[in-house]
Image (cartoon, rainbow, N blue to C red; front, side, top):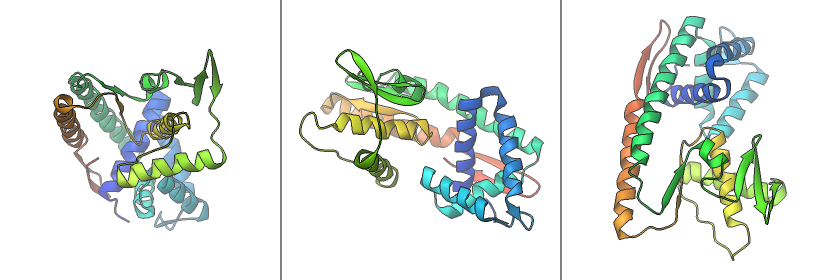
Length: 246
């Protein structure tokens, strides 16, 4: 299976996550991933065995990509040499660093009444001052103490539903009386997306009037265009040609 544009975008997402979690050892972790994937291949990696297919399905469910796109991404990784993996990681790292610099420039244009945050800033309470992240777990302040946010039962179903609809439709409206937990639900869904590198920034809009509405719309359009340009690259290996647009 030739890698698709969406499949290569998934490779970029996987690499980005490794860069965030492993830092300088991202290449080594990618090589480990490649070695494990090769063990799950059959017939020169024409297809995965049953465990490999489960991993494809898991990646598809986690990222919202189709099973074909997830399979394309993992087969791509399995087929690369150490040098090709190193080159690809460095290429993606360079694109991410360039993008982060441009993001900071764009964020300086955010109008008053609108607060943006990346994963680290969200974890420190920038979007919701009463909610922070400690050791990967959401914690909510009630009076003067923080408590772990437990995602079980119906609440967990709602978080997954909001996350899924945001991924597929782009818009979710949460309504209900004061104190029912709308902000808590929004925070849990936002953190899921941020921590899984499905989004890079979230925004809290406190005031949206005629003045900052148009400027905020321009910011979003510029950000999307810059994201497309920075992560639009071509790559060519002995067995694979691809074009990435994320």
